[in-house]
Image (tube, rainbow, N blue to C red; front, top):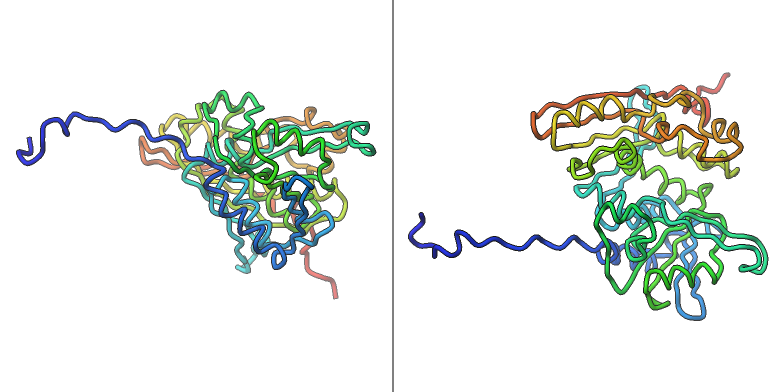
Length: 345
């Protein structure tokens, strides 16, 4: 025993730290998006009650930098997102997106996952019906999804941000629902709109490469507390003007070009994930996502869930120190869909 240390200090234990607030951590990123909106190509509007709507691709042009910032907001301030040029010999694609997080479960499933269904009928909107899946930190204020019961997490913060992947600005009835469910004052909510066919929308979807892996881990029934850290990369395609093709490109970027490295607690889990996690385990693997989606009449629930996964994975075990590898890339499929083959002279 150290004689200079009182005995009581040797036996005392600190209470477990409270989980971080994804809305508090992302608040400075939201402030940057608003303050730098003009240079980021983002158009700001405010409802009569003061809710901020940040248009990053509906009527505004958006930008690559806006997409990176929005992707970081989506991760609740718990992840890094960066664009990297890749002009090595025979590159998979010239522009790659890289993502990392030391809090993968909370960043990816507790914040980034697009799991909050928001809709309104044409009667409610006074015109066209509205539907979008909400992602980002405000999901953890509303906790409308069963997933939050499994995570055992609920955020409490006076401000919140929600990202909507849709090609029109949200109607007031949807804004009111978000405010009510999140318990926010109107002026303390920021809604960010990123259509998939926009530059920012393409970035924020492809930046889900680690989140897609975490969701597949969850689908496979692996305990989420096994996952310690996650990094990933995926090629960043040019946006397609057609909505279905744009969605196809962003999905293909992950399904056929996404690489993820997960660190887990136990060796058995690492081996299992390396084998079962990659998208090649799906019966729908090998076809462009837009073709798969069209073939099932645009019904996501008819697509084999095993398809929604990165193309290639490495999984490291803290228990043994070993790393296991599975899956494969299909750069040929990507280049066939996106272009990039040499121009004939």
